[in-house]
Length: 212
Figure 1 (cartoon, one colour):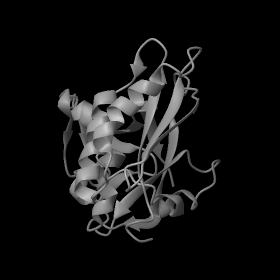
Figure 2 (cartoon, rainbow, N blue to C red):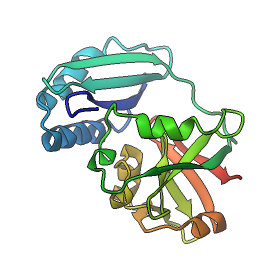
Figure 3 (cartoon, rainbow, N blue to C red):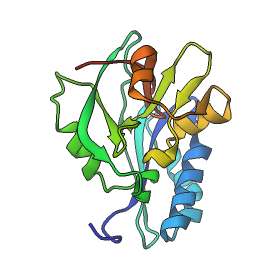
């Protein structure tokens, strides 16, 4: 895929009474990525989103997808969203597919999803709820749609550095900024010894157990 064959996007959650969760962080990430990757139009994203927010469904949560093409064109789609019920525990498996920490596009939310699709395809939905990617050095990175967090009993969640080859997730950023998480180099042994959570701004934090 060439540099012109992908777009930037943000997946967000809209609640009728609260509006778009982590709106500021989503727009900041979009603008930051647009600047670094040479996309026009990010400065217009906030007004574009505001103009369409009043038309979003008021009868329940929605999943939004805000897209930005290289030429600056913006698009917004939405669909109903159903949150996971309390007590949900995800089965997490490790992909044979490896992330390349030198691939700087992994730090941005782009439509180039081949790596994540290949990892997800290694297991059926019955075998795994989410799949964990490691990098070329065998270090934990992230899930196919989520950031990785570890509770090692110290009271602060640990999450891998983006230099490992992973996305600067919005929930991850929120938890770091609120001092509920900090960036730490993690190993598989540490994951096996602690409590794992996978999460994103759409779904929140979901407990997971490493299987297989």
